[in-house]
Length: 159
View 1 (tube, rainbow, N blue to C red):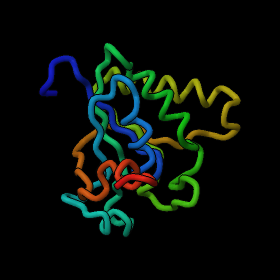
View 2 (cartoon, rainbow, N blue to C red):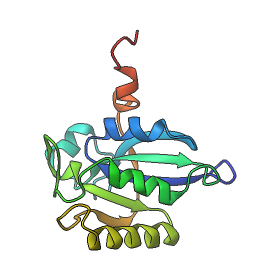
View 3 (cartoon, rainbow, N blue to C red):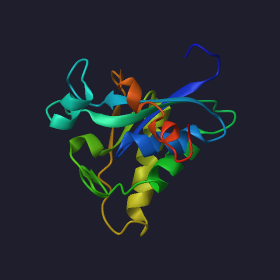
């Protein structure tokens, strides 16, 4: 990270528009951007990702200050904002690009994500097995500009 003390988190929880809108409003989140990650296709476009051939998910990359909001808090919000038991689907959005995924940036994030997933699976919270992928972050491909802050830019009453 270029700014001292800031950290990065990357989550996919369905369509990235709404996910970004939730995370960008949190105290301690410095910056968000939406993009594609988790797949094996270089420089994907939105059309490429929607085709299902890239294996990328729509994700939100979050830059946050861990002195204000912890990675554990971000994980808790991640679990709360989507259904992690539906494979390749969130609500009406269907396809591998909408899968539930945590892309970790260090061993501590991996450990915490796996622990929280295990805890949630052993609880009765969802009633079904969590299918969220947890894997190394790898390359993040920034989505086209019209996707960035989409909900904010298109909120009713906005000029």
